[in-house]
Each structure stands twice: as structure tokens, then as C-alpha cells.
Image (cartoon, rainbow, N blue to C red; front, side, top):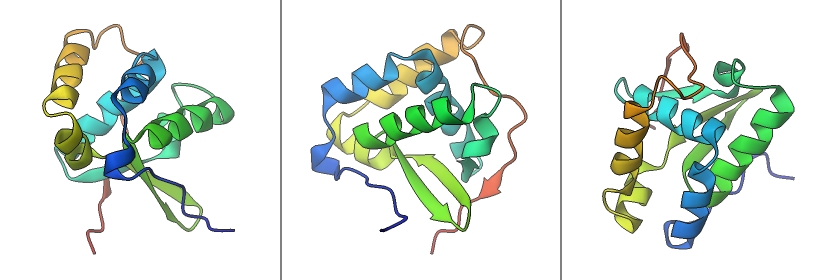
Length: 125
């Protein structure tokens, strides 16, 4: 069994699934936090979101985000590193992610955001 999680191809990313996924406040907070980390070219680990919810609930949300094409998960040892699939989303739905993130930023005080996440540099090999 492969440890690499399934990710849809760019062409398989569907707008209704993306919008449905973003309608959940915890998933929106995860996407918002991942977008904030892009500024420093980094990924986040699953454990960086433990303040949002329990492990099993977060695993469910991460799977939904991955299955709809919003994020990519990289497995390294026992860690899972996540980042947004910004290029794929921009190619499929130009401006959508920025519009959603801009709106989320206006409501950031109401989102269950995580603070103090450890930055992990992306290995771009």
C-alpha cells in the first residue's frame, strides 16, 4: 500500500466540490492558515492545527481538502506536510482563491485560526 495520499489532477478539480469544502469554518481556517504560510515559502504539519480540533476530526478535514484539490500533502517519515495547490486552483478558477482568502481575512477575527505555527521550509527538489 502506498503512503502517498491520492490527489486529484488539475483537470479533476471541480468548482462545486471546492466551494462545498470551503463552506466549513475549520477547513476555511486551515486554507487561510496555509495561505499565510505561503508568504515564507513553507509548509505546515498536521500537528500545527491541533488547536482547531482533535486528530480524527482534523484527519477528516485534511482528507476533504486534499480530495477536492485545495491542498497537497507530502509524507516524510511520520510527518505529513501540507500546502495549498495555488497554481492548480488559479489555472482552473482564476481569482477564486484570492477572493475567498480576501473575504476570510476580513472575517479573520471570527475564524478559528491557529497562531504560533512552526514554520517548516519547503524542500523544492
